[in-house]
Length: 258
Ligand code: GDP
Image (tube, rainbow, N blue to C red; front, side):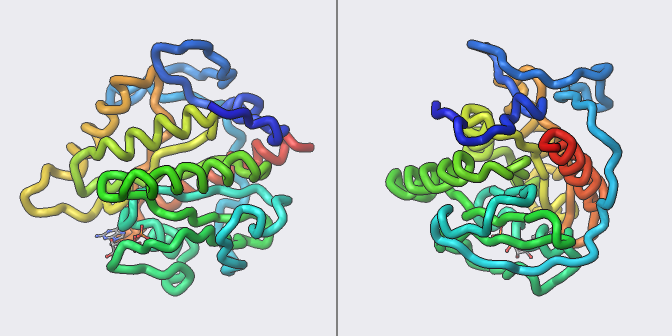
């Protein structure tokens, strides 16, 4: 466990930190609304402001950085995407920004550890963090990824939330649940974005079943689940819900930093 000492706006201050059971020391201060959900899971309830300006009018690639120190100045709110290699991160960036050429969509899982910053509407950043693949990667690779992303979480004071991407076309992967747990340990606010909701794979359970099974895997350890979105970069499903959520969080962040 490490300290988020450098970040004045802690996830707790924003009411976004999630807690796992058993809660050794519960710190979160999320404002609760009436609990309840249609799928039977308990979700963390947040009192979010209405989403203003959720449309993306302009999106431009700013830079790739190999070190956190080289990232653009941390003056604007930012949202970082992480997930296993091939989860559909580049495709989601392109779908959210409606620009097929913005992020490179690769067939081969990339090995380069780059932090890519995209400036949206001149006022916030979408950040593409390196993909992980703990199952296949060696121990040293895994340690390297953890250190690399941890540095990012500690140093970027403007990080509002992480979007953790999970592939809905495959059965639950422990590595994704581990990543969610690790984010919670780092006290990084995050939501889960299921990707490829349109992509039914042969010999695999239906996507809805995979989504439910992943939530079940998390619910075994979590008292309340973070916000979840089901998306497809092919059909645009979930796009406006996700952009609305991001806009609400930006608004919350702006109010909290005023
Ligand atoms: P990244 O490595 O996480 O950036 O993943 P990519 O965006 O490069 O996508 C990996 C593969 O999944 C590519 O072949 C994409 O065409 C495919 N893919 C990504 N998103 C979707 C989606 O929503 N639906 C379907 N059917 N395929 C997708």
